[in-house]
Structures are given as C-alpha cells and as structure tokens.
Length: 386
Image (cartoon, rainbow, N blue to C red; front, side, top):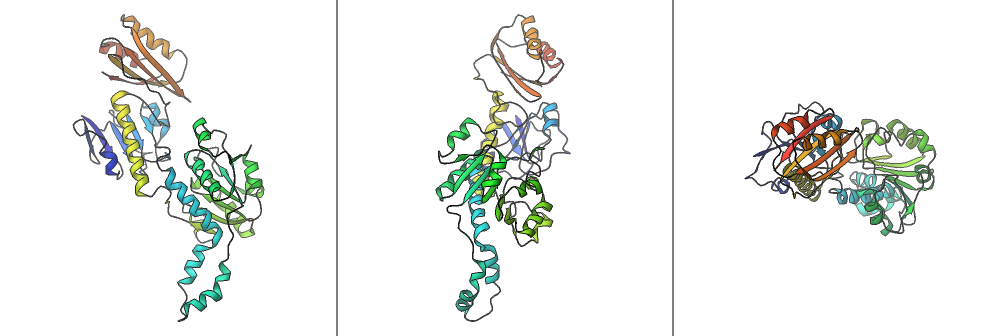
C-alpha cells in the first residue's frame, strides 16, 4: 500500500485518481511515499526515508527545495499548462483594467450621495476616460503554455503581438498564431510595446528583470502586467517609473506593501490559477504523474530530473536516480552483467547535474546486485518495479 500525504487541500477529483486498494491518501499519513502540495513551504520539511516523489499541483515550485530533493533521490513534479487558461483569462482582464480606469470608476461610484445619481455620473465620468487595446502593441516575455495562449487571445482582440522566448519549445511554437511576431531580444519588446506582460519563471536570471535600466528602454506611458512572479519586478524602480509617468499602470497578482498604496498600481490577491477548473486540472495532472512514477517509474513533467519513460515490457525494472557524471552507466551495466543477467531495455536522460536511468532485465535481479548498484558513487537511489 503506497501512502500519499496531502500538505494542502487538493481537489477531490485529483485524489480520486488513486486506487484506494493500492493507495492511502490523506493529510495525516506518516512516512509517505509521495506528497501532493500546492503552496505549503517545504524548505524546512524533513524528508522521510520512504519519500520518492513530490507533486506540486501548479506550475511554480519556489516552495520546494529542488536540489535537496534531487540529492535525496526525490523526483519533484509540477503541472505545466493545467492552469494556463485561468491565467490567460486573468491576463486579458488585466489588459482591460490597465486601460480603462475601471477600478477607480467603481470606487468613485460608491462615494456618490446625490439623489440624482445619473446626473452625477454624467458629470464626473470624464475623469475615468481610458484607452483601447485594439491596434496597440502587446509585448509578451515568455511564450510557454500561458504566454502562448495570451498571445493568441490578444491577437484575436486586434492587438499587434510580439513575443520573445529564447527557450520556446517546438510544441509551443506550433501553438502560436502565424500572426505573432518574433522579437529577437527582450530589448526589442521594451522598445516597441505599449503593453508588456510577463510569463517567465522566477530564477536568478529573471529576478528583477524589470528594473530602472530596462524600464528606461520602454515607451513613455507603457502598461506592465505581471501575473507570473513578484520577484520579476523591482518594486522601487516601478514606483519611481509610475511617479514619473514613464509607466502608466502596473497590474500585478502579487501583493507588495510598497506598491499597494500607489494610485498607478492595480493589485489582485494571487488569483491567477484560482478557479475551480484550474484547481481540478492541476490536481488530476499531479495525481496521474505520481501514479505513473510510483507504479512504472516513468517521469513526466519533473522540474529536478529529466523526463524519461519506457514501456514496461521486461520482467524486472530497475529505476536509478544518479548524478550526471561520466561512467555511471558503465558501472551499472558492469554490475548487472557480472551476474550473467541480460539487459533487455534501457533508457537514460539527464537534466543539469542530475540523471535518471531505467533498466529492464530478464528474470529477477537478486538484492545483492541492487545493493551494489546503490553503492556506486554518485547513485542517489535505486527502486525496483516488478
């Protein structure tokens, strides 16, 4: 019986993926084989000896210590694309909110005490005049699952769309409308765009990518939308740009006390993926990835190990998590062949410093050989699936 621990409330449609004759699923299980998590901070979490995997029901994994997990042979999954439509819809709403003074207008309307409210509205509405997005240029930084959907939706609203993503996948490129223009650099986005929206992860390279220097390259009156990560924008530089009029409006899904009181800021309380449909999609996707890994050893959508899968056609499957260094594969093969066992199928993949190998042999490999593989330098963990 495999034990799945829930660190946050996970949509029931997701937990129902687990066959209860094979899995125990709750927030109180001890020494779990896998964890499902949303926003809980795991950086100080103590990993038990049985923990094989963590599945984040969402895209961001800043709350999980990825390298510490990798060194312990714990595969971390996320659910890219499962919440993309929810964030796309909020991004389109953000474009409108940044343009039409809707928020200020609503708040002003609540202050009207005149009996003839219609007359008061007609007299005062001009102060909330905005601009239209049609015909304007939207620059998109990051064309993954969310950025690509935003690009296509904005184009359908008659915006001129340019995008930049040095790491765009072939699949992502195929999803884009042919009318989306490719920017050769982020600087081109800054220079040409009336609106800029960010859809990249928070990394050392992207932290504070919107700063005083990059804002200076932008058009006067640019409107900036950040539904990705708060760390992408330097708050002090944004306040200065709003004060000077360089930035007309900043819409963010990440509350920051420095920004909340500024008239040019529209802040939402991290609503990007907060839809029932998105939570269901993420939970189902995360659960299916755990089942595939725990039962077959296949990895899909890991953020600290490579995606590796192999049809289970052999008698005995050995799953090996190890460091991505020379000679590990040859050492594994040597151990197996020393017992006159034949490797029927084998696949290997690497991601940065870490690698994953699946080996299938005919017959059952005795425990002494599994122990020898696990004792190889740079091998973190070995799992057997029969």
